[in-house]
Length: 232
Image 1 (cartoon, rainbow, N blue to C red):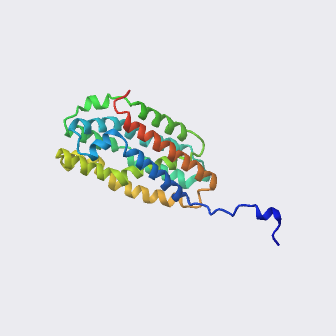
Image 2: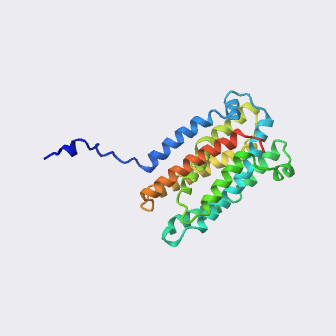
Image 3: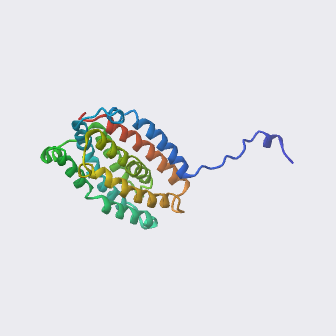
């Protein structure tokens, strides 16, 4: 028997999967990336070698910091989160030398290694690193998986396209875009492992909300990093 109260209850909504929610975040991120001035110029074939150098220069500090904040996150997972702790340790280990690839590309296109290593973070990179280190320093920072989804996804989905476009426009050799090409291959593997974690029983409803929130913030700050090139 249906009561008057029952008639006014909304139908039960089907729960979206975590991956589905994250894909919505990615779609918004991808739209914002297309509005980044340097990436617009790249798509239109209006970049020079200096633009490629600027991109590498501004990415370096975020790449250096990547393995560091992931290692910090690993150290803050307790034994009840052993699976996430182990995954973070392996991830940090896999990425802790990646900045050397970027440095070699930068030098291969005429950049100064000394100037690159002495470079400062732009304001977007400062905001992104500050947010990620703060998050990683909290107890059981499950939300950090959202940052990994965005950053690893960028390598898997965009890095090869960027590399090929820079090569096409600027006539670069493979060894001058090795960092981007390598990350396409490596991050495809990382995203497969990450998807397995995101769909595992280790992720509860509150964890899922934290992951989606972190993905949104990371996406916005990453776009800021790419937009604020050289703005220190």
